[in-house]
Image (cartoon, rainbow, N blue to C red; front, side):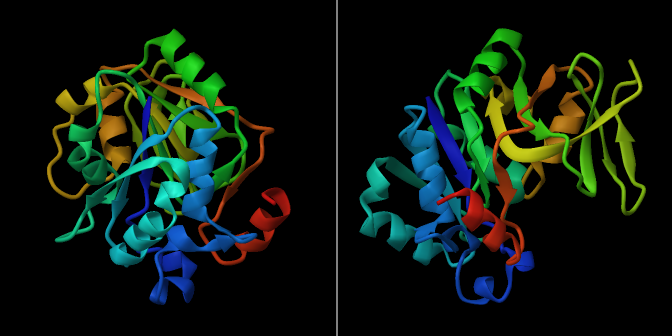
Length: 237
């Protein structure tokens, strides 16, 4: 099984660190976020990984080379000309994947979720994609129906809402930035250039099965802001 780590972002919420460094190299108890996610994937036998880079790309590339990929085989997807966001970044890296499902994880999330259970669930459901979620509070939610099928998205701060299915009253769930994806998705993506994977999922949810996997109760930290570092250091030693 292969995986992708999203590490290209500008990390604007993580300033001042990201004024001079990529967020993926922020340190949590002597290990970078990138190293921790590579080692997390290793726990489940996933050692063939592609990492996209853009913001201070050379720092990420040099860290990977200096540490021999921390024991994994790392391929770089360099978004040199333009940051392609999550959807565009994934599409650019499509050549890397084979016919098997693969994992995608944001570099700035840390978790001890049992990834093998999520992969097992994805395979049993035969869904196009499975999204890791919890019931924590956030401002932006994916919406799911009673069958765990994606049916919309909502921003509680702005009131913006997109409903793609109206089977049952939608249930808001907070996305954890971890996906298991069937490579068949690449033939279905219609967007070009720079775009969010959120838009892709919402478009495809009208006709395809996109499920959620609830890992509420496992350790999880979105290290999106500097104040999250202290929380992460208490959970991930």
